[in-house]
Length: 112
Image (cartoon, rainbow, N blue to C red):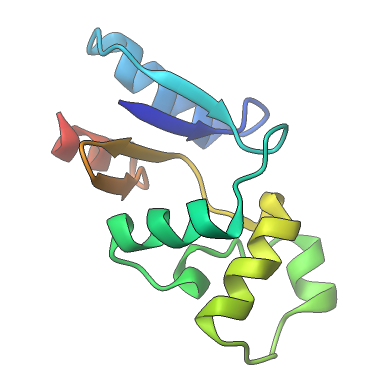
């Protein structure tokens, strides 16, 4: 199992704690230090079954200043996220070709 994690985010830390409490072996990917490529993001959104815009953190200051009210294609949103990984919702947990956004945290249990 893999978790795309931001250690500074309380929701992301709660997601990791949820997995640790369940004694799940997990690979932690700090996607701010090691941003995902356009290809990796494309595959991740396919696994999530979500459009890239659905996974944008719209309350982020960067989004409000630079992207709010603008229309981009999925491909363009993926490029924007690749260049600005802080905009990606978290935590995202991936297992065996499936992925889930851990909001609320209990959603992660669907992959266990």
